[in-house]
Length: 290
Picture: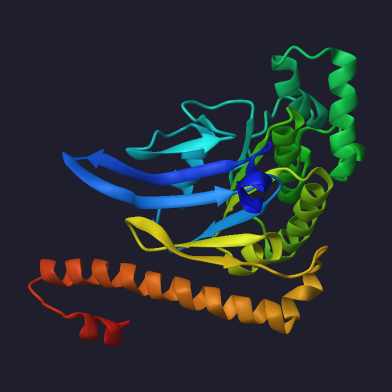
């Protein structure tokens, strides 16, 4: 057994193995994801980026157990994923808090469902809220929180039940730029403290670089892995690192990779639209148009 094999045979290993997923609508089958293999080692922070419609969220939903693969398989610690489970915490872009419960009650909800006693779950919830800088707001209701605070509560709630992995689907997409940067720093701090395996989907290239150990770049639909980019920037990271030469070089590399796929996707859409009105265009003329 190789050194790498030994390293990944521990808690929190995510394996997406030759995953493919088709959607059926109006009697037609559309391939959303073609053939994707992704590995997240225990304690690793991995992001997926790519053009719109490439299947990023489909992959994440498959790991969460919300969508079954058409082809291939998805496993966590060697167990095939067949349904949602407490071993996987999920955070969405939309705030999914219970408005009638306080911050602490929201965090305690999953623990209560697991049968944990009141004093124990209160203690655990308060510990996590303290790590996220939210302890002073434990008795507040969600409508009194800012967007960034609501999403922090969502992350804490996802972590409260002790999942093996944390899945995040554009969790900061609805936040303003300044709040987003602060949330990235908070998420980094929480992850470095807990060292849970993370699979993160985002459209924001700077965000992906800042947070990740590795980044998978997806092709245009049907999605495949175009590139795997290691992020060898030292940790801990702070926002100032985004101005460093190494960071900017990674940004240029990723922007180029994603632009190629975005133009390819737009080219296909334009070609279909032009054909629909009786106009033909080869790839060269479309490239000129774009």
